[in-house]
Image (cartoon, rainbow, N blue to C red; front, side):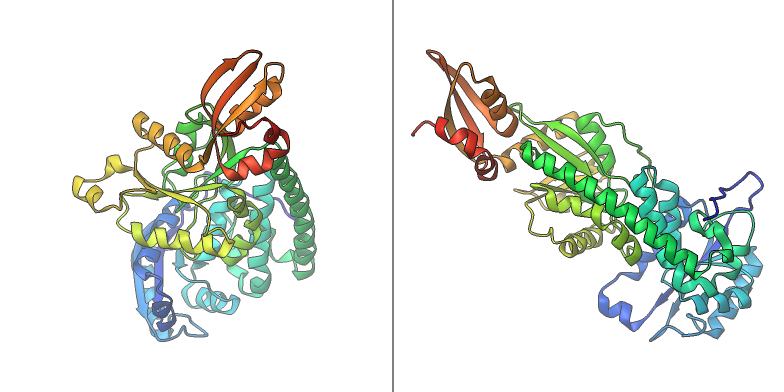
Length: 429
């Protein structure tokens, strides 16, 4: 593989026109084209693109040759000439043939939504696992389109669509790409095995896991940092962090849980990316509790929540106990807050409000709590005493001779896990 060539000071900035095609199929699936287009603007800006204009087209089905139709292509060409655009970014996925035809007709760099997201991920991945996952997704995307990527791969000067394996140009033929994909999958399997060992270790240690999930830029990483003092990258951008980060969170009463931040979700997340990141996303399946972080100030809040629930369903984690955290309440008008659901399972919070952070830990503690049991622990069994503090919430501690009586709130799952050590010490009630 050729090495990645990053942008230099002499690079020409991508100046793009965004293109959205709304078909009958899209209407039937319930995907909101305006939400998708708004996200495309944010994605482009996150990638450092100057957005000049937006072009919309309605058709029953995509044009197999031109995607948006020959007449609309001519309209796009005239708009690009008038505005000085050098790039066209499409909100849907294009075939290799469509990319080639559009490049020849427009003399522009042609990027689709999938390639744009992959490009952003390539710039965000920092850990070995993240880098492997992104390159695997990029190559899986590139392989069937190799013949349609002529100008994208040959253009000099970097910019979107050229990070990662895009720099290897056409010398990376299908055979080399397939060999590289095989090698990346092997490396990823090793990482997945290591992740599995870490999960097993957490299970054996009795660690309770809580997962932060949500739409990209909802504030998950900020919340993780505020709750646990985690050293994580935070920026008001889409996909500011990719790699899952786990930190210990102490709850009221002393119990500790493992809080994990996961990659943000987005509408139409590329299939290759979901496949490559499945091992990472499936961290959610190991969680005892899911915290669904929502950007309460977003005008597309409900649509974003639906996307998250759909992805959780696909991952098999939809049935997990869940608390919805309406974050960024400090950015909402009073009437906006009144419209949000309230009651059990819902919290309106700001990640920067200390009282709200305390409420979150209390709700987590209540959600994970179970029955209250009394344990009589011999004074010389400090290992059992520390175990009770680790896996349950110690409500009261009293002394009876050489024994210590612990009043502990403990959920059934944790008790079942540790009953082989604790059962003989439970006091009858």
